Structures are given as C-alpha cells and as structure tokens.
Amino acid sequence: MYQPDHYRVEDVPQMHALMRARPLPALISCGSAGLYATHLPTVLKDDGPYGVIECHLARANPHWKELAEGKEALMIFQGPEGYITPNWYPSKAQHGKVVPTWKLTAQQERNESEPWMTSDAPGTYIEVMLRGIIGFRFAITRLQGKWKMSQNRDMGDRDGVAKGLSKRGYEDDLEMAEIVAPQGAI
Image 1 (cartoon, rainbow, N blue to C red):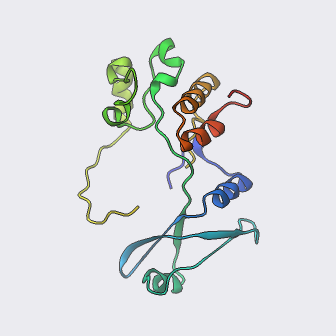
Image 2 (cartoon, rainbow, N blue to C red):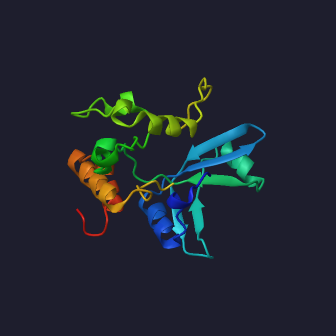
Image 3 (cartoon, rainbow, N blue to C red):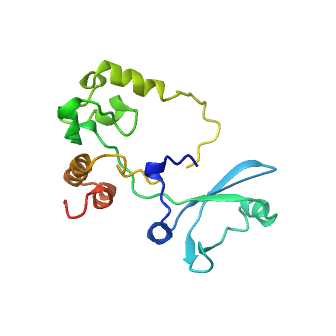
C-alpha cells in the first residue's frame, strides 16, 4: 500500500480500534482463479504483537480453497470517508494553493453553494499538482467493492475541514470531523 509519511499510521491500538469499530473488511487474495475478494465479518483477538483475526467464509464461497493453501492475503478495513472541498481551508483565501482531496471536482463540488474550480488556485500551482498525478481509464471487467485525515494540513485548515464536515453532517462526516479536528476545536 502506498503510504506517504504524513498519512502513515503505526499506532497499533488506534488501528485495532478501527478494526473493531468497522469489522467488515475486504479480504483479498490471488490464486489460480486470479484476484478474489470477499467482504466478511471479523473478530480481532489480542494475541501476538499485532493481533489475530478470526473469521469464516461460507463453504460455497470458493475463496476459502485458495486461502487454505496458506498463500498471502490482504484485509482492508475501511474507516470513514468524505470529500474535502478546498473552500474549507482558510489558506485558500491566503494564497489559493489548495486542491480538493479527490481530483473529481465537477462531481464532488456540484452540491456546494460556491463550487471550487481549478481557476480558484494559481495556474502554476495547478500545473505542478497535475505533474504529480497520472490518469488511467479502465474498462471494468469485474466490479468489486489509509488513513487520510488531513494530517498534512496545518491546524487552521484541519479546523476548517472539521467544521465543514460537522456542518455537512453526514454520519461519516461527523466521525471524520472528530478525527480531523485539532484537539478541542469542535
């Protein structure tokens, strides 16, 4: 998994808390049938340095046969998610060097009262940001279902994000606001 240093989480109790709060990960492995994924309920046990996951798969699910061979697998536990508009960053007014957390502006900004547009940021900043990404287009042949909580932003921006999420008020937004907020800010 790609983990820039500012998004890296190494706090085992914090990761365990997420795993217990959202115990339905995607289990992914690769075997003779190719990549295979199953969402399944899990129980985290405090055995060993990182814990042990207990779970089960239906016998009718062929995924268990690949796992029984002892090959490596990956479980992805998903925390709350939500789009962050650049309008929530106070630094937007200061220098304009902000972009959305997801590069899907037209789709994600359409419900904002004042949608952010790339023209809101300095053109040279957008050019630099665009050089840092690579676009892909995939034809979907199978559709199957980090901790990115503004750690790379200054406290003013984190406070703005937390307030914006709280105001929007979706369930995941409220959970994210608690995580993103500087201590005692909301």
